[in-house]
Image 1 (cartoon, rainbow, N blue to C red):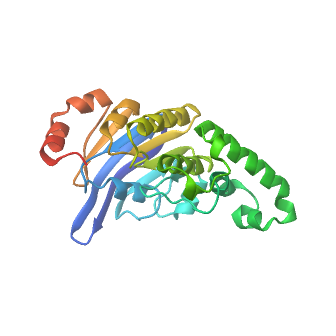
Image 2: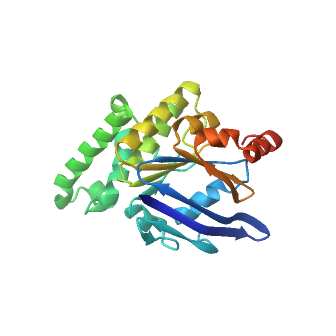
Image 3: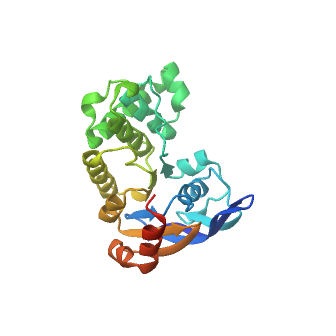
Length: 254
């Protein structure tokens, strides 16, 4: 079953055609990878899908409804949630509190009411805290729940940001460079986490520079070059694709 369908999406910035006529589907319950050299249009495509940019042309259909043109918060509320290349945690809040921010997307009172401890939010706040603790347990970070985000190791901060997105109860999770800055061991752990998230029923679309990680965990892979889709197939077929090999050997992996 198609959960996300991108058709003929294009975006130009002045004289630069950042994304050109890109189409693909993401099936429910799968992990789909998106790779390409620097400047290929990967992050721009993510921004178009999640409402941070408006496409010049094309359609984006999520759960059988068009979402292009909707603001990011409305798209997130429908179940499409993303992370960013740069960590965006609240540094003085604990790991648990950062996860709770994601939980508040689906609470009646919202984040501000929870912070003000208004009476009608008390019961809801207890449920939110329990849910956040459950997310930390899933991610293996229960022991740092009460640590300020700024005091966590970089790899732990990456995982907390992933957890905050997961707490938004996404149907599809878009991960932009989830292994950026991580060492080999940490990258392997992130790969395991992404698979675990998929196994809970969350579909995943990810951009990642670490080709080994993409090849290992993806069910299918899309390859972009200069804003155009040049290949889409299973990992083994992508590894053998002559055009993909030419681009990476000729232009360098980025």
